[in-house]
Image 1 (tube, rainbow, N blue to C red):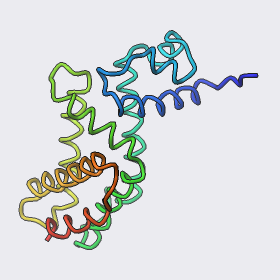
Image 2 (image 1 turned 180 degrees about the horizontal axis):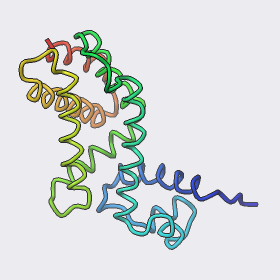
Image 3 (image 1 turned 90 degrees about the vertical axis):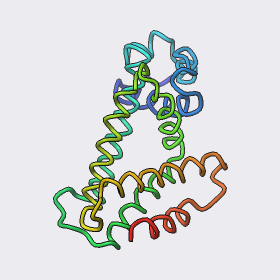
Length: 189
């Protein structure tokens, strides 16, 4: 006998499956039918929860952002006083460690970030805004350590993204944390 999930649990299950599917195939490469089959649902049943493929994509991104925002706020409260280099290095290492524990989400973002370079992609504006906010937040964190925190924030984010992408391409066959710590030690003087 099949157990019926409540609406919230069903949406969460769909989002978890969508993260894997979109991370494997990208937004343009997956179909609602394939996702519905993986979720043991009909197309109409899946669309009942999200309305459209674009709405589903935006829900996946919002879901991931909410999880990240909560985790990062716990690590680094916005109202904390200026930090020293050691604390900044620990916080950035914690961000990379969190991503290392969730390769499916790193893959999702890597895939979508490239697709969303096209201005007509449904997540284009999302990534433009998100990247701008991430650079601003990193610049705030790095402000006490640099006379050009905006430039350093861009470099730190590029290093994180680049190492994570290589890590995925190489089937996670190197120590991401060791590589990050070495890179951060050089970047954040």
